[in-house]
Every structure is written in C-alpha cells, then in structure tokens.
Length: 353
Image (tube, rainbow, N blue to C red; front, side):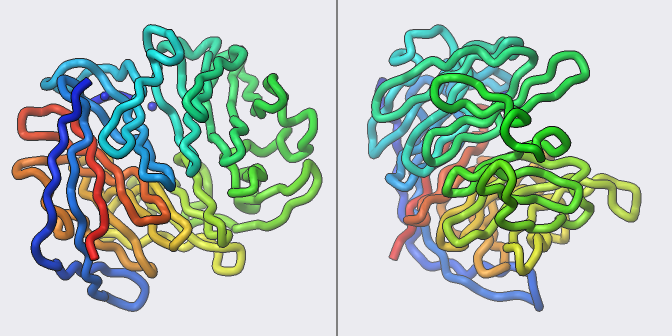
C-alpha cells in the first residue's frame, strides 16, 4: 500500500441500481438502513493516490505518486479533485515534493514540503494560492488544521516535546499562553478554533488560555495512546480513536464518539474487532474502517450503528483494503482502495435519492 504517517481525468461513474439493506450492531442490537451511493474513481490518470479528506463543497484532497501500478511507493504530491478537475498544489507551491496532511471544511489544506521532518517545513493552500510557513524546529509533526486556518504543530528536541500554534505569521509555544500545555498535549481544534487538550481527567476544550469549556472524559481504556485526528462537530460531538491493552493482554484499537454529557462510548464494530473513525460531518455520520491495519472494510456509523459500505456502492470487482476517510455535510464520502493489480485508487461516493 502507499505509505503516508497519489492531466487527464480518469473517472468511472456507476449508480447502484437497487437499494441495499445494511445491518449493523450497536446499542441494544441491530438495525437496518437503506443506503445507496454512486461510485466515482477520482484517481488522476497514470498515478496512484489515497484520499485524505473532503470539504463541504465536495472537493477531495488526494496524496499522489507517479506510476499507474505497483504498491509500496512514497507519496510525492498533493492534488485537489473538484468536480472533474484537478489542482496540483505542488506546482502552485513550486516545490519538488509535498505531502497533503489535512483539509478543513472550507477547502484549506496544510501540506508538508519534502520528506524532512527536522526541521519541518509546511505550507497552507487557501483560495487557490499557497503560502510557505516558517520551519518548525526540532523533529516536527502537524497535529491539526482549524476551520479558521490556524495550524497546531508539535516539535521534539532531545527529550523535550513542545506544542506550537501558528498564528499571526509565527509559531508560538502553547505553554507561553496556555497553562495546561506545560503538562497536557494539544490534540486538535473544535469548530470555533478552540484547542483540545489531552489531560489526565479527559479530553478538554479550552476557550481561553485559562478556561476549560467542557470535559469529555476518557474513552474506554483511557488515553494512553491517542490516534489522531480528533473531530468535533458543530453540535459538540467529539469523535476520535484510542489504542490500549485489553483484558486479554492484546492491543485494542477502537473509535469513540460522544458529548460531555454522554462521555465517549466506544463505537460498535463488526465482531467487536478493531476499527478506526476517520471522518465526521455535522449530521451525526462518522466514516472509517474495520480492521484498519489488516484487511480494511469501509464503515459508516449512523445513530450509533455501523454499516458496511460495500453493500451500498458498486466498488470495483476484486478491490480490497477499502477504507472511508472523510464525509461532508452533503453526506459525500471519500476513501481509498487497492485495485486487483495492487495499485492504490481514491474514490468518491455520492448519495442517491
């Protein structure tokens, strides 16, 4: 598979002819939900790619690599697919190699320039233009991009880990303004660009350097390992993933979703196996994959139930490792899969009435 933590349009449009009944388990039992999607292959011709996210206009961020077949290649470019056209961010930025990291709901993109992470050099794509940010010293990683264009980063120098916020043209250490940042790592933003911190008592949103607006508590197994990203919708629902050692001594990988009042219950999954939540919209839908590090299958969670998307859309025959990576407020879903020849393709699912 392509490695990531890729100008003529090649597109296949197929409409699911019949509604398919999908069954998921969660809460008190099972439920049925009729879902149908049109399927589009949105892979640029002559390239391989994975879908990183989708905005509310239906534009999809693709990480791409040259070569139409063969697995195991490194990503070299970020491209935005928008209604049949492709925008090459690397060409706009005039750099030899970039890696798309995240897209917010308005279509802004944060990307890494080159493969070097010490120092880390990143840029922002917004409104058709690119801006290169100052390097983040130490061994850096980008944590999150807010809807207002703020960037959250982390840098490790020796044994010292420091969170930074890019604002007003420079990287500002969070500990210089947020007292909590000296002991608790920052892990994301809410829709109002407030910062989420992982504290000993739970995931908390701070509306100011000294004010915690809400504490969501801890998901099952605690937060010994937090798998990014973390999402918060316009209604205050937080969704993320965690990894911990279960009662049988084996690692558990699970998604969670909830509010401050409900806590962060674990998302149901097939056979109670591992699953990752990879995207969330403002309608309560969550998408991701079951068995994400084995043989991924695409899931959508609605009303606390999961549904296997393979029964809702005509995925290519013989395709494997199918994973949904984003969903917008129009319920359009992006994702990635492996074709029978081993090449990686990105797809877009569009709901049918």
